[in-house]
Image 1 (cartoon, each protein chain N blue to C red):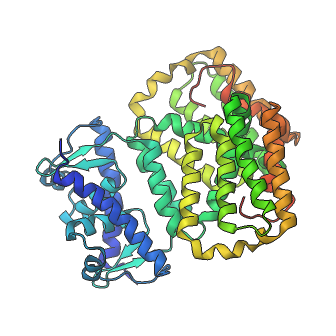
Image 2: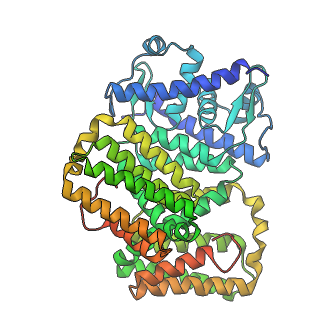
Image 3: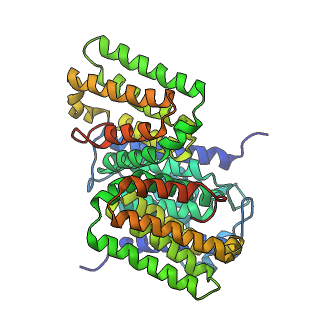
Length: 239
Length: 239
């Protein structure tokens, strides 16, 4: 079967996006500089107006260029973390395998930065970690776990232990995980294993071990506990 | 100063993108399902045609929807890794702080997955690591280092040690780093510290230590060496 006109134009749009980025680099344009006008770009790129506009809309959506009525497009001041956050959130909402990939990414990033995080942790960082731990304890003691609350505490804990690593990217990933959960709220019930009180109490102890390793300034122990917490001893799940 | 019409419409486009994604989730549309027609969407969203088209072009550019002449838009089969790879590459080309962020991300991901990588490494994975190491040695022995070749070997080495971790995300990051270097080829000369033979030979030994730890199946040592290699003993640079 031959490609439809629009499938061809999809490929063309994606090539055009690449060529506009190349052009910007070659001409050494930087934040605040003007892009050529639409008709100049049409000449430079040799594509149809529809394809050009699609490419420009995409770049604008990613935050790489901005437009202002009557004065065409300008190169934006690109904030890497912000742009990544947005793209990651949009992609993760519609991708069916995104939760697994996000969780894997988060696990690797956390294990890879927990050593530095323990070394950098201030007393107030450690206090914050124990504050979340206290909430976990209260949540477990009230009996039946509210799943949504549990998930939110789980994210909060991992965010708290990572604050002192000052990893921008981890914040982005955690934001995307949060968006994913918010977007797929109806699918949450599959995580019913958290209604298992034995597992919940085990999880609590694992979290406490990690928190204590922070308090003792034992980076190796924090790292080993975190790796076992994230990867071992139980089926892959939420955390 | 008040917002210009187009700045307002930038915000509107970004809101519209979010609302289309929400709509897809609420209606539980999945891959292959049809989006409402343009005029239905205009009614549902209450925005101008220009804003709607910008939002749809962005979603199409990210690969979340596809279009086909005469039959409107469909939800795409979203490949998380592929979509992320593309967005990351596009963003990293134009973001001025992207190299630092990509390098930090790669460091954390590598340290976070090298333990599993050593445990999973097959003999052929280890052979591949030593093959890259041999190229490094040859490159150093010919005297003056060719910077571009060195950078490429550096990427190849880190890719090789991570093959057995089977981390999709790390491949994405490495791809983006490669694109970044390709795109910013003129800026490379700042990394002239690699013309320092003493440093190059130290780098070689660090790489060999990591490789040997793989060969000995010593995950803890590989992890510690990699952390020191990436973070300690020398100013932040290329690797």
